[in-house]
Length: 405
Image 1 (cartoon, rainbow, N blue to C red):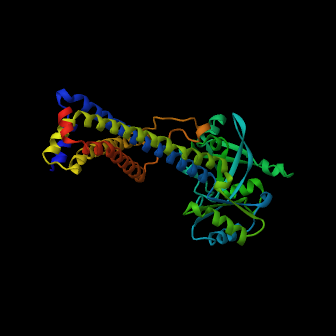
Image 2: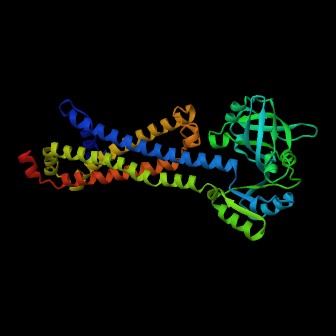
């Protein structure tokens, strides 16, 4: 161990008559720790919001949704689904669906819903992941009755539980001047995604049952296209317009929910700047700590210089102190941030109103790059902040330092 490292360690350890400076060093470590942890937690929360909202919105719709102009029914859906799947290697699934307005009646009331008939073997509905009762069992084996999956809020309003029966009226046909048809369904599952806007109105059934209820024959309302890369959505939507032509119309999830994703992007822009200032404030504490140490150790610095210590050797003493504070503070900040984020993921102790935030608790996305970027940034700023007091210490005149200290 060099003399610079040895002296730096001794300066950072408290002695009874010099305890004040170790207390200030501890405050500097605390500032770095809190700044690091705050920035990581904020980035994890913002990433969690973006992932959770994107996942749920895509789950209820898709990366690219293809519909007919003016909601025209699309015929030959099996053949067209194969054509759409061949548009791009990024397409992972093409799920035809029938979706229209309907009324559902139970023994306790009547409510409006948006009934979506899907192929359960293809559809990647978000309801599958958020089932709270029953299962997403809506397939229609030979001889079995029609099945229904509804949201938890809707089930509470209509007093429907798994196994109960309800009558659904296909009013979408009636709105077009036709005659409404009614069918009896059995509730097989109840879901709760946390997005009140969807849980209130979305219900799922088998594609074949929806076609019968809405009297559309072998046609569908559209296709949910899921992609392996979300950044391919614009390109795939453009290919639909070029290849499929009229009456096919494609829109990406970012176009359908432009306001929602614009809000997410707006929230992400200022947060790193604002929270980065917290780390800068913490590094200013290091400057103050080291400057006070230089003033207090002026005589010792003069003695070291008179004994042959080089300017670089004296500079290293204070750089080592700054680096030690940075490493300890950053390490503790990483541990604190991980502990808070992991606890929120496991116990969900921070809740949110679902009708405002589209989820029931604060989401967390733990990513290694958040820890790496924030840690490197923090340590780099701390080292830079140590340069000023280190340079001042190395430039002290040994004779003046010994005589007047």
